[in-house]
Image (cartoon, rainbow, N blue to C red):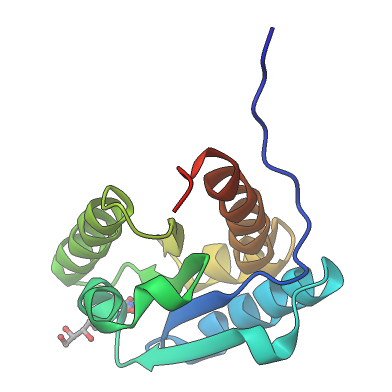
Length: 156
Ligand code: INI
């Protein structure tokens, strides 16, 4: 049997993080979690570039424009929180679809680290309190994918 599984070793891996400033009090916590996870798994801070967008809606567009081949993985972080209007639905749907589309391209993996929550409390629970930190989780997924993609990359 042959089994292919990515490890979580971060040494030498280059990461881009695209993060939304909207609901920054939450997204900053996601960034802290992601950076903590990456550096504790051996990623050098010199190998991490953080790109800030105005909102989550803009994350996929930014993903198309960054020099993605410079990175082994791109983490997308943001928090979309339901308000009084259907705006939430549109933003959440577009950022989700956009990241999924980028992830199907032949470039690096794009990790979906977007919190979609009905309330601020639900979002806070997932940004370093009761339910862990989705930024950390996204980074861990990114480490695994960066290593997995490297294992299956055809020789250049
Ligand atoms: N952007 C978010 O990242 N989170 C939200 O909760 C949010 N809501 O609900 O409005 C949000 N809106 C801004 C949007 O992402 C765009 O920046 C804006 O529409 C301009 O294109």
